[in-house]
Length: 303
Image 1 (cartoon, one colour):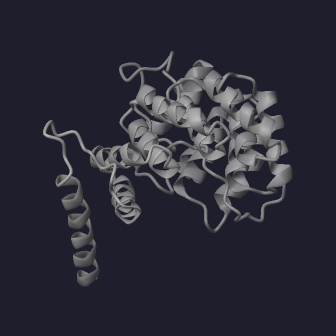
Image 2 (cartoon, helix red, strand yellow):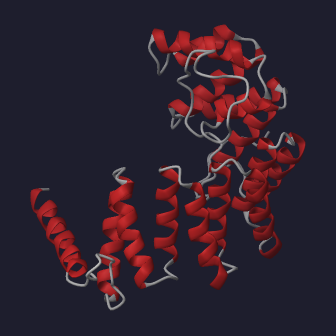
């Protein structure tokens, strides 16, 4: 382990040395002549920094790579993702839109742009991106899933559910799409349907705290606070359980935007609930996130 760290450190120092030797006098990086090998090394460092949560440093490395190779899709996506983490949504969308000027049919980058728009409170723009992807690739389950998420944010739950079912036709029993479908039913007030989908996900051997808390939120909004508290207690202490139950009581009579904020923190500006009006929740983190769909399938019967 120690030797591996030393090798990685020397690799990082080598990349930094190359960059430091090619700076302009005004400190603007000039790495146009950086070799492909050095660019790949720099990309690995940037990815490591991003994974470690140091987006500030990662952004500098990603920008150097993009400066050297503007059409490096991985660097552009990494840069945009870090900018989103820092809530710089306009900059993130600008990076990806600039890339798409030369590669308009790059589905991976356009998918990422859709996610940036959602993070920046703009589901209408995100929906346009996902629809454009589907116009070129009707079988894209990720884009179909994205259409569903956007429609849920816009309050068009029946349209959202139709999109999730279309995605499930191509990727049956996919955990993420099923979770989105179940949460869509909850937002639509169809609690029994939503709980019937979310419960098997929360009972899987591989279930995460987020799965259980999604189900707890569903039970709470349906009025079954006892069951919600029971599920919360699996992962939270008594104080956090009480906080969440109090928060759900407020959510029951709150706006659609506030419910979206509870289900997908940061996706919308809450209208009815502020920190001064209700307890701060310990609720799931981004259950409606749009991630590239893996080939792994769970073995849950399609609802």
